[in-house]
Image 1: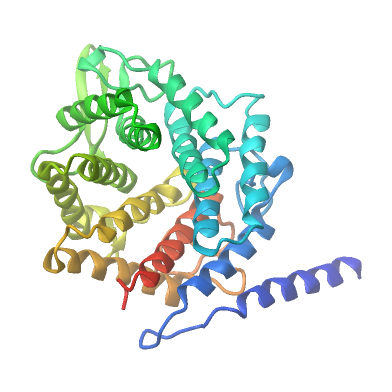
Image 2 (image 1 turned 180 degrees about the vertical axis):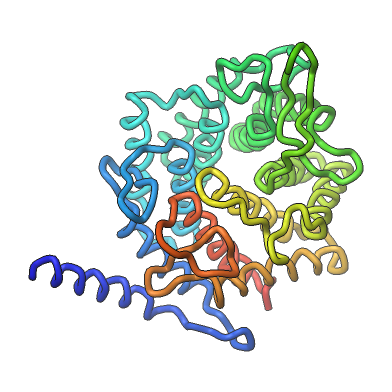
Length: 375
């Protein structure tokens, strides 16, 4: 009986948190901010674990994953930036400290990309809270990952600290972004110099000069240097777009904006990065987070005032297609769960990674809607 009552109370809590949103059809206005509030509230009650970190799925898998929890910090920052609601602040700080606890008492990690995700999220947390601890964490992580830069293949940061002959887009694109974000804090030109150096290496080694697609990695196999051009993922294109945006904003050099536009236009038009016309379904697990990261930087591109209406319209339309489809067809209510394919409601277990992508899409829609871009 106690179990039954607890389940009823949980349902009432979940359902109540959803009443603030407007369940809309295609031809009606959507209250994106209210939907964001709902999905944030249910997310917290569903995925929060011990020590301030978040569990790996909605079924209570308590295994700790560093990089998805770093992305949780990003999503909490989204919520706090949008609302100014102070209830986000302890969630953010407990998560930051919890990651260190769960990671053996340190933020240092074998995977450079894991640390880069947390570093970037920490800068964003610092900018919105002015809490120096976030800045200190970001600077520590930057100095840690920089030790993995080497002259193997002419430069670049390794994917992991123990893979000197494997260098990935995921350990270089986010590094450019982190360097630029740290540069923008104190105007230390060393960060800008590093951003440009890493950028030139990635462009020369991992970016298709024709399409702007970003190849996943370069490595050595059987004594031969091989670029993996078969693996093209949405999140790598996303961070490449983000890197170009930040360098363009700082330098106003047109080539950076051109690179971002080239990659974005290829992304929205090439079927290789689509599933049923939407951003590609890469399943759950790590792949569940790929398109959420793309959404973050694709949104920043849409926000750029330097892009004229004709060039921006396809991006806005593609964003709206994904957001409206997810809202109307893919968002499972009242649980507010997101599946890997935004056209269909999830069935069964929903990984933390997959849920975060859906949340990033909703938060991005709320941001663009507030700016009048989705009207």
